[in-house]
Amino acid sequence: MLCRLLSPVAIALVLGACASAPATAPDVGASAGPWAAWQDYPLPGKRRTSYRPQRAGDRFIVRAQAESSASMFRRQMRIEAAMLSGVQFSWRVASLIERADLAQADASDSPVRIVLAFDGDHGRLSVRNRMLFDLAQALTGEPPPYATLMYVWDNRAATESVLHSHRTDRIRKIVVESGAAHLGQWRQYERDILADYRRAFGEEPGALIGVALMTDADNTASRASGDYGEVRLISRDGTPL
Image 1 (cartoon, rainbow, N blue to C red):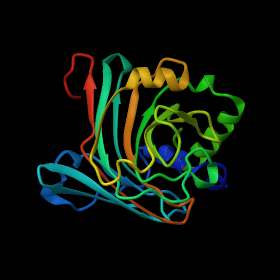
Image 2: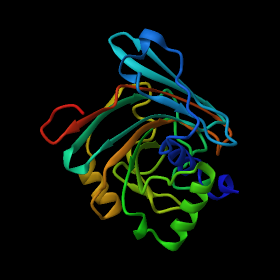
Image 3: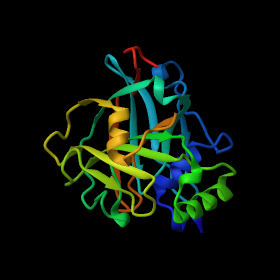
């Protein structure tokens, strides 16, 4: 029932927030580098996207490949908002998903996403969101994050657009790359997390409790792939977290 009511992204974030959620770490040995603390999180009823940490020249990357699948590669943490400043990340995409459209619930796939999960006061949730969160907790034994902010590559939406999930307004997406102009290129980003959260949600963020990569192609029953560079969180004093 929950899988029909929540989008794959919402389910992914629920599982990513749960200490009891099923998790497996890929056998990558010395090639893991900065990805050693990250884990693969499958979604109930979904094929699993493959996330493979590896060395590529002077980079430690994660190569993601989705085939009608949706899952996450995630790192859990707790960083209070007062300590947090920015995030640096990079990715490379060879091709877009032809029928994908992040503004449409039934086509909401993307070759690359950076997903940030935040804690907060669940007592402020709307009645609809409380119902969805209760269903999620019934499935996993833990509540989902209070709010989720994503950085995404979309086929057509203008960069800096803020897209809302159709199923819950506690998931919002900022388009940082759009269209095919930069396919095949490494794209580097540095974002002010607090400013982006305020713009997307119109409120102050709580603690950051998780960061994830997500490549999904389940809604369009297609294939997608992307390479991710290291994700670096930056503190208020400019030092890595």
